[in-house]
Structure formats: structure tokens, C-alpha cells
Image 1 (cartoon, helix red, strand yellow):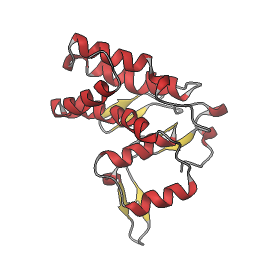
Image 2: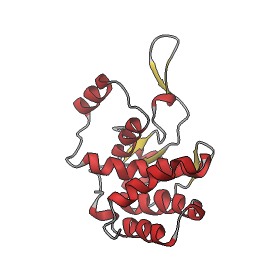
Image 3: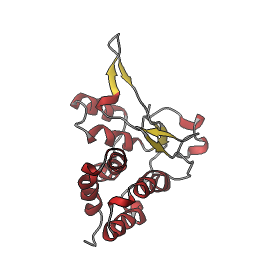
Length: 182
């Protein structure tokens, strides 16, 4: 999936998708952007931060804005855009009747493959065999463990917006990690 040609959904190496969709019950904005970092900032993190605004105090909003302003210090433009599942966690993986792996309930868009990989690790992860097989066909650039935190911030913010305050601490741990002004 990450190696498929995504030009049917976003022409010319762009990021986003031909239409917006849903991540769980939350609206997922997929407006087309030229760059990955721009897309992730504007269509993923900023949208979720705005939706969750009532959870945060002034200093916390300042920290989030700082993270958004400096996102290019942590994320990198990928070598190529990839078709993403968008909500790739263990609950969206099932074994079909003939024993084949099946992915369900996508929140599809074109982005950086690392965002999908990060989501696989957010709620318990897949088997080590999955990650070994993935690494055989997809290079994972150095620094992924740092970027993984930022990619999963999107999903934690979405969970904060959908399910409430129990996700606030996890969101703020990531924001604090990338903000030096505390």
C-alpha cells in the first residue's frame, strides 16, 4: 500500500486526498497541499488542536503553537508520497475467511508512510514479524522514534476530541517534549 502510485488521488506528488473523510467519528480534512509538513500541520494537527481548544490553558496553547511553528525541525519531507490507511492499528486488522490479512475501517489519504507505521505502535503494536517484514521493503529513516511521537499526537488529539479528557495527559506529554518553554 505504501509503495502504490497515489497519483489517482493526489496528482503530481501532492499530499491529502480527493475528498475529506472520517477518522473514527471525527471529520478528517484532506485538502491538497504541495508539501507533507504543510499538510500535516494544517490538515492534521491544527484542525485537532482547534477542536480541542477548550481543554487547554493559555500556556498550553502557546506550547502547541510553538510545536506547529517548528514542525519542520522534527519532520522531513518523504522521498515520495504514499497511500495511507490512516487509522492503522490492531483493531483495524483482521484475518479473512481464507487466512489472509485484511485491513478495515480506513481513514485513507496520501501522506508519509511513517504516519501509518507510527499508528501501528500507538495502541500496543503489531507482532515483531510485521515490523521485520515492513523493514525489508520500506526504509525507515533515522530519527523515526522522534517523528513517531508527533505523528501519534494527531491520533491522541483525535481521541481527546472524540472520547474526552482521559487523553489529555498523553497529548500534553508529547507537546511538552517538543516545547522548551516550560
